Length: 155
Image 1 (cartoon, rainbow, N blue to C red):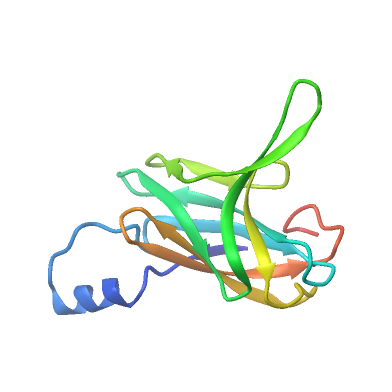
Image 2: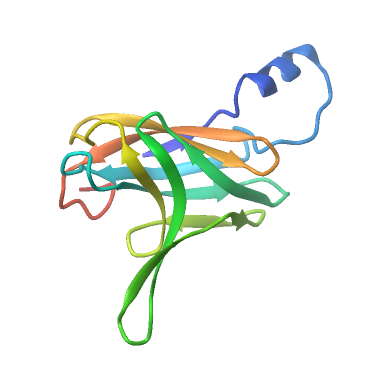
């Protein structure tokens, strides 16, 4: 699934008004491909969402946060595995995406961690996830929830 996303009402307002403003990560610059999440077992454990974020602009963009009505504490996390095979997960404050580059949020690496779920993540449903960028731009994608054993958006 390929989704080009919007940056919000403020950008639209300024565009129609013809006013100038600093460049924001906008619908022409940020492309989100293959968004997906796994179904949760209830609400006691966190969920996660995955996708590829492409910066098609000529300027770098920096992802600094997430928001969704599905979780009270959405955050960007990274899973790392040591040489001894021990995995740990830590929050990541930001993800810089160079012009023309992409970043994959995928199992076992960077991902959108969805803590304090407000409802179970049910297979077949979707939820909105908003990516917040350092420059004030936002991109929202509708994330499909796949089965418990899904390994990617094609499952």
